[in-house]
Image (cartoon, rainbow, N blue to C red; front, top):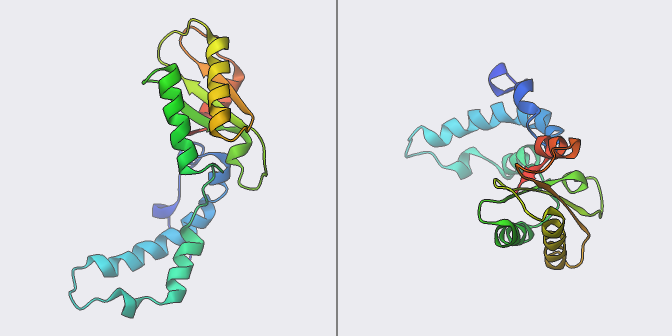
Length: 171
């Protein structure tokens, strides 16, 4: 089934996705029209409608295969929650963590954890804060190496900040 323009993700929106997710967009565009058409059965309010009668196990497999995007972060939800908690405790409740780098590449194996920590207020001792965050998160990740990049109003903005903002995933 060809995807209509309704189901096509515009280029200006596609660039907002991390590279690993962006690679899955054509598959999602092909699946989207089929899912929309099939969903109409279940939302039309027909009391005689039975999904088991209308859809087979093969249909269910198709949805899972075609529409499923793997967890592109290669960290568990529990690990992401730990990172969020450590960032809030260490850098302040308004701080946000963004994962970037090899952990967003589902085809990659191993690798360190690259984090951008966005802090809305000035940071007095950035090197000490980055080291403290790295050590605490590394312990929570069973000793995995953690690289922390800080972004705050009083710190010089570098190309790594732009890269991580563009390609990173907020935890």
